[in-house]
Image 1 (cartoon, rainbow, N blue to C red):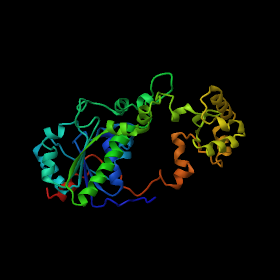
Image 2 (cartoon, helix red, strand yellow):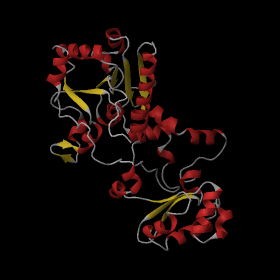
Image 3 (spheres, rainbow, N blue to C red):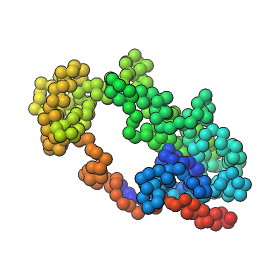
Image 4 (cartoon, rainbow, N blue to C red):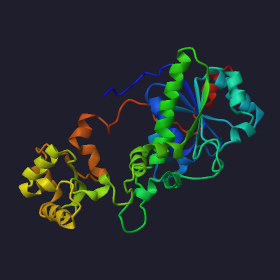
Length: 354
């Protein structure tokens, strides 16, 4: 994997967002070479800057989402700052904002104003529920969007309350990855001669899209309930098993050939025909087998079995995993650090002749 991607070199992105979704979206663009200018409120900036844990006076979480960007501090409630932003819009290809619907219009920086200033501009508005509908102005966070989309209700054991997901699926997927894809598609269209466009990106919309298989099963009459889905432990061939000493091992042997390979490695050929059994005895049999050895001992047994089985790693173990090391996913690379608040204000304004 190349440490530096310049695919979007020459593309300027104005990032008016805060917190996770928009920052992740524009970081994807920055990592591909775009010049991302983060527009922040003087004094406070992006709220993520002050979220613990802190490293050298700045949030480690902010740093993780804002590398390769420049920071400009502008108070968009003032005419002078609005003028500066509009001058930036003239030079930009993309503007990403994450305010509630109507805020940009109240600032006199809505789509009609920006489009008139730069007809080729791609504007992307990232919100929780979208620009219209009864929830458009409603506040929310990832947990709420997953709740409305149905994903939260499907997560967790059959008995007991739904469990929040450890990864912010609606924020990162619906509010980060989906908008980035839409922006790239819009840029291609502009390059082909099309005009600029306003993208209405909703985190809830994105989360609903991730549940396509669940909705298809429900529409087909299949029961879709928490803890009772095909890929949430319903079958012994797709489960997480506790090992001796507290570790866990993941089994995803969905295809018969992988299940057969697993049964052979476990020296239990009698289980081959029970791949999709829902009987408690079958689950108990697998649980008992995995409880006889530690996770690392099972890794010695199963690492050579072509059976779709892998140890469950703690977050502190990921960086040393040989596949992660080989792909260079977690290492220092020559990329730009996250900027200090307003660090590039003078630099960028000078570029505009201001």
